[in-house]
Picture 1 (cartoon, helix red, strand yellow):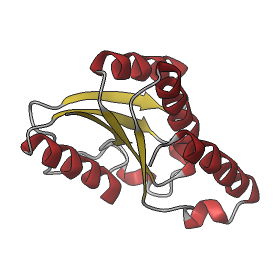
Picture 2: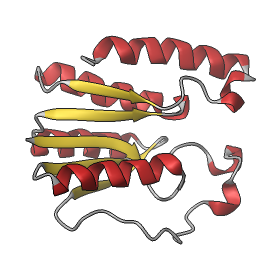
Picture 3: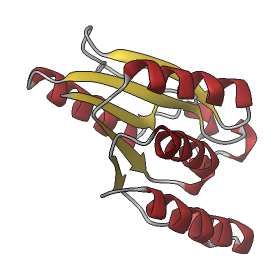
Length: 159
C-alpha cells in the first residue's frame, strides 16, 4: 500500500514532528511505500513562542532512506503549496494521513484536501492531536479561524 503522511518538519521540532517520523518509519518497516509532505514554516517566526529553537537540528531521529520527502510546505508561499500538490499527485498514494495539531497550517491542509477531493481519491484520514491549541484559543480571531477551518477540513475527510 502507498501511504502519504502530512505533518510538521524538524524546523519547528516538537512531539508531533517526532510522531510524524516514527509513524512514517513504522509504515515503511511494515513494507508499505511511504511518502511524506512536511509543513516547514508553520507561522511567522516572530509569532512562534519557541522561536529561539527554530531550525535547531539536534534531533537524532530521521526518516528511513526509502521514504520520499517533500520538505518545503510553507504557510506564506503559494509556490510551495503547488509543489506539494504536484508531489502528492506524482506519488499517487492509496491513503493520506494528515496530522492536525494547530490551525496555523489549516489553509495548507485545506488546499491539499481539496486537491485530493478534486482527484477523486484517495481516502483522507485526519489524525487530531489537539483540537485547539491553548494559545490559539485565547485569541478570538484565531479561535474562530480554527473552528471554521477545522469543520471544513473534517468535512473533506473520510476518517
